[in-house]
Structures are given as C-alpha cells and as structure tokens.
Length: 252
Ligand SMILES: [Zn+2]
Image (tube, rainbow, N blue to C red; front, side, top):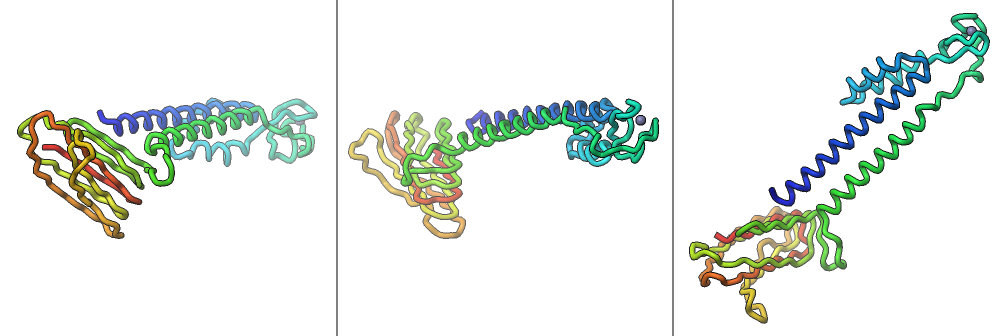
C-alpha cells in the first residue's frame, strides 16, 4: 500500500465518521425540536434518518412537520396548534405574542454547526497538509505533490511545482541496463539530471523532458546504463513553474 492509498483511506474514513456524526446530530436535534413542539418526536426522527441521504427528511420536517407545532394554551393549559386562531379546547383567541419561542433544540443546532465546521475544517486541513509540501521560499514550492519511490521506480506528481528533488538508485542486478524516464506537464519545464552519486562535482547528462508550451507534452526517454553492481545513480528532477507534472523514472 503506497502513501497515496494510505492518505486516501484516512481521508475517506474521516469523511465517513463526519457523515455519521452529522446524521446523529440531526437525529438528536429533530427529536428534541419535535418533542418541544408537541409533535410525534420518534416518528419524525425516524423519517429524518430514513430520508437523510438527500436531506428530504429534514426538509419535510422543517417545512411540513413543524406546521403542526403545539403549545400549552395560556387559558386552559391544553396543547393547541400554534397556527390556529382559537384554542381547539377552550376556544380562547390565540395571541401570537404568547406563543413561546421554541429554543430547546437550538443549542443542538449550534453544536452541530460547530462540529460540522471543525470536522470539515480538519478534513480540509488534513488533505491540504497531505498533498502540499510546506513552501520553502518562493523559488522552491510545490502544490499538491506526491513523491513515491518503491524499488526501482520513482514517481513524482504535482499540481504545480518549481522545485528540485533528488533520489538515488543502486544498480543491484546486471539485468538492469536502462533507465526509463517519462514526464508530462501542461506548462513549465521538467528536467532530469542523471549522474553518478559518488562523483563530486556531479557530472551528468541533462534531459529536458517537457518544455514550456501550453500544450500537453509527453516525453519518453530511455537511457542505456552500463555500470557495475553497487553503482549509485543519482536522479535530480528540476521543475520550473511546471503545472500538472506527472513524472516517473524506472530502472529496468
Ligand atoms: Zn385553551
């Protein structure tokens, strides 16, 4: 499982937990609100949860269910409709000023809002920190980048990159006799420097893999290698204002 899969898994787990928490909060809020309004709280909570996927349940409750809100008549004390003109029990005219403000459920709504903001904030923050490396000055930044090196392969992707990265490969098998470089970028340049890691100063061959055009550039280069086992090959990828970078180096 590579780094990207792990990040995706954590991301979707966080999303799942957030949606379940949101559903629980909405259910609690509905129950409290319906109870305060003299409505069948259990039934409405069931409807809201049952149709929670497209928010139809909560919409039905707020627009239709709440129309039947009841309050205790100030005259006889029996529950009567808030939208009625007279008390259904004693017939006393209903004074709008005497209808209580239903606010028991409000604190649950506030809690839900805060939880939602914190939840989505942390998911967003997690995702951003996972995909973007911290900026190290204007000349060396990348946005939405992943570098992944497993065995004889190195891949580097970025939404935007203007930085330099280095990775060493060891020649471990006599069968490894070529280095395959592939790169695409929608603009900017991607250059790869291939050199021997133990040589100072580094002397190597520079391969411009994509050049600054507005068109989608694909470049494929195969470099024959002829080095003894244990030789350390150093690859340096230099990006300059490159967008939609997709680079891979494979030793095969
Ligand atoms: Zn009454």
